[in-house]
Length: 65
Image (cartoon, rainbow, N blue to C red):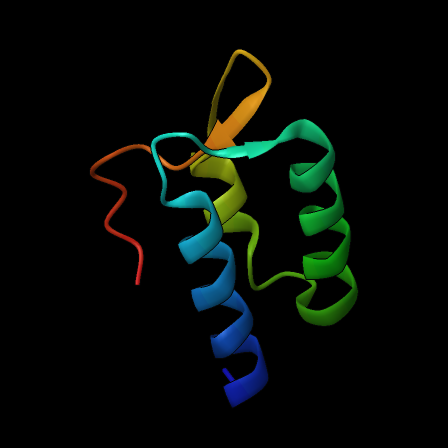
């Protein structure tokens, strides 16, 4: 995995690793960006995402790095 993809993964995890999460619009745009830059390298992150009340976030014990 190259440095740019690695940095994108860290950024996505940092944005989603919050109890408050991000808005549905932010989540959708983040997915589009991830697919444009790192297609096939971020799906594992998005598969773990949970949602509640229109906010998207990673579960507390996601184990991603």
